[in-house]
Image 1 (cartoon, rainbow, N blue to C red):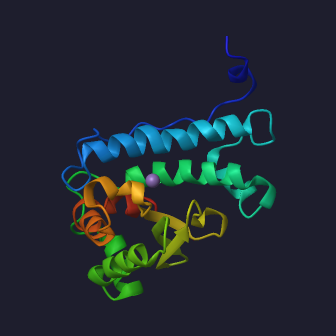
Image 2 (cartoon, helix red, strand yellow):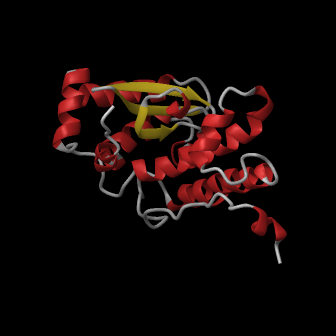
Length: 207
Ligand code: MN
């Protein structure tokens, strides 16, 4: 019997919300298989090893991220916890036959905050393309406005306050097999053909 399982509740690797081939040809089954089955799984597995027997062992993932953010003695736990969360959020930010018109309330907020849906998409694309090296681009809600953010490596907006609505993984492992160095083609295809605006709209909250 595995005694570790008796001592703590492991963080789970959530199931992909679609088949591994469902996002092709924009994101191939090969990329998804490695990205989910190796990269994402490895963040979850590593996190579970790191938190055994620590104060973080029974915390929900979001609480681990908030508790370790910007704590120099917990960098490794933060990185793996944040990447575990970022990837679960990324899979939901995508859907087969995505893109298109956002739901009405989200569309209105895009118009108020950016001047229109297309301008919002352009800002999101710009953030994803200008993130130097590995990281993430985010559509977030702050009060009654929407904003675009970019973060480095594993960092995410959870500890700072803005509410994440949708994200884009711009680590090379997200696109290199399909697009090599052409991040621009991956980002624009993702926004136009896979962005799950319904998921983004479901994340809209009061604050
Ligand atoms: Mn990734």
